[in-house]
Image (cartoon, rainbow, N blue to C red):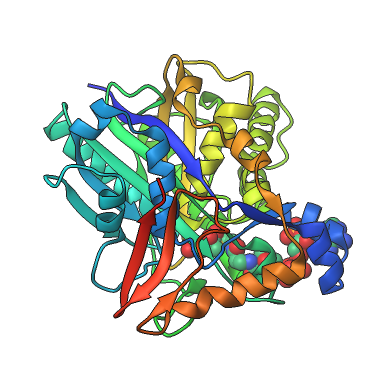
Length: 387
Ligand code: HMG
């Protein structure tokens, strides 16, 4: 039985900044951000949005009545949790009006955990093939104003339905997970911004990619030539290029040409949104599937998932006929966003910290999103469906 990704949808914030403009304000050559890092725009999170509202917005785009009836579990993968106890999946399940007979949990391991959620979902679908699992990868990447990481911030969510006989990607049996206790990036509970050993983190990422890929090759007898494309976790788009070039090792043949072209297609959306942490690999996959016109059903896609701390996984899947029809319109959503000034972004960045009081009220009228965070009453978050 084939099991894998049946549908995918993406949601991000309604406002963004231009990173060439940010570079000017920060006194940096814009080409450092545009070429050196490979990012051109960045999602800006208003205080009325968080992982719950973004996750619900992404999931709402993909569910029809049949899906709603067969979802057995909702798993939210995030490292931007809003509560140490209650799973964000419960709020999302309520906003989506899903049945109460649904299992709802949250999982964590930096940017990697959406891949763990997909693997767990495969297990559930193998046991109950008539059921579906809704996996939502939702995060807010936040490093701080005027830090080296600022250009790699972002926010958004990718929702995926994992089913039998999937219509996007049938996941293959062999996958290689690899973990080590490494301090390359972490977010202590008392900190409002991520802590990171930036250059070191890029080296650990590349090492984990090489380790997992080479073991996958040994276990399967497959080579790079067997992949139509590889999708990478993209904390910033240049990272995917660094990792791919590390294994291409100056190759200049058909395979190298194909994988480089596919990488460009996969970077398109992340370049305009920024790091989504758990969702980045899967936004990269959506970007690949919507922007590489040479891909064909039946071809093999490799996926490299990485989460600091650190854990990596390399796995693969076979593209299914008609996969293009099961993806939300990401380019359309991005073109509807509003460009804001760097001063307005800095204001929103600081306003995100307003939830540390028992009672907070936000004006949600300026946020065009359907699902919004209206504030907090008696320490309880107030989510509203505006429809
Ligand atoms: P930096 O200090 O800006 O680095 O930090 P830099 O000065 O080396 O510049 C970056 C690149 O721009 C270099 O290219 C420069 O040459 C180039 P590279 O050598 O890397 O190929 N450059 C220029 N290019 C064109 N024109 C110019 C110019 N000037 C310079 N004028 C860093 C960069 C990524 C380290 C920083 O932004 C950071 O710390 N980001 C956050 C950490 C991160 O994203 N790490 C990625 C791997 S870890 C990961 O993926 C996990 C993560 O998603 C979290 C999780 O798992 O939860 C982060």
